[in-house]
Image (cartoon, rainbow, N blue to C red; front, top):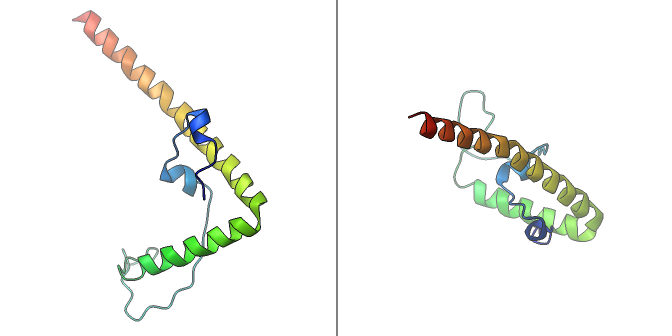
Length: 108
């Protein structure tokens, strides 16, 4: 579904955080014996539920994007911007690390 975003042409590599940034989903699920990650019950960790939910959400999103391709284009622009911003933010850190290493090597 998201394979043809133009990532290869732009040399952008998407990660999960790029896709999840700014997205919210509310699901209502009834489970006989639910297991949560903490007392606040903000994350369901029942292993039998995850594959079913993933499959249903994937099918529904695929159908939605096929029926409304404009939404996929809007999402693809958002994903590429998020990935580009993340990559730009990572760049100075690696340059800074390189400068520190150079200083360390030359001062020894």
